[in-house]
Image 1 (cartoon, rainbow, N blue to C red):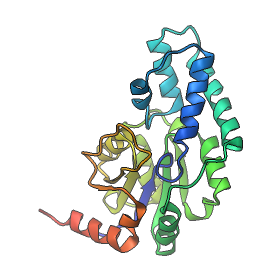
Image 2 (image 1 turned 135 degrees about the vertical axis):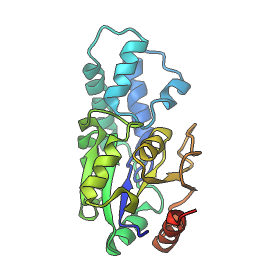
Image 3 (image 1 turned 180 degrees about the horizontal axis):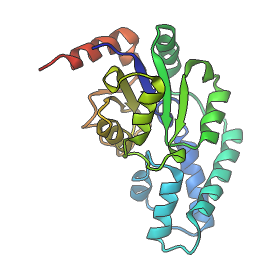
Image 4 (image 1 turned 30 degrees about the vertical axis):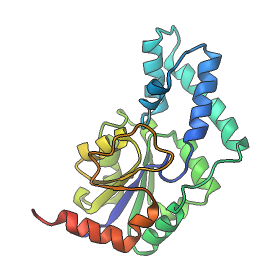
Amino acid sequence: MSLKAVLFDMDGVIVDTEPLHHKAYFQMFYDRNLEVTDAMYHSFTGQSTLKVCRQLCEHFQLAVNPQELVLHKRSKFQDLFINDPDLALISGVQERIVEYYENGLILVLASSASMGTINAVFDRFNLNPYFKEKLSGADLKASKPHPEIFIKAAQAAEKEKHHCVVIEDSTNGILAAKAANIACVGYDSIHSKNQDYALADKVINHFEEIALPELKQWFIEKSKPV
């Protein structure tokens, strides 16, 4: 079975925006007098901002529209995105993106981030030329761990699901990939906290581990009938 497309998550896989999201969320929590524990915050990983804000409204019985919290958090994030000097690509990922693209693999982004955030990241780091399509979970009916975004990503790649692989760093993302019946590489990095990689088909700690020859060989071996 040959590998033809790679479906990338963004936050924590391509760029480490998690510290910025963390700061933005907790600035919003502070402004709204919401006491959100670290455990509760980590349970949000991989979900769209709207889904998170709906949970906040339900949990804290807030008499506001969840969309109001979304806009509040995004305003904080946009300010940090422009002004925070620490935003950078994940180590090794740019080399893999270029290598995959130059060797004919189709690349599709499938992120829970808003399209505004996706475009800002792609413009800042000049990633647009390498990707056939970018999908935002914020534009879909269901968030990860629902499989919708990866089913649509495979369709956008115009490849059968069994010729695709997902690269994810979150429990919800891995669950979404598996629910879509697509092979999944779990990226367990120094940035990952309290995520479960047990369901991933392969777990890596650095992108050097999935240089194209290694990724293709693993994919072939995985695809062989037992």
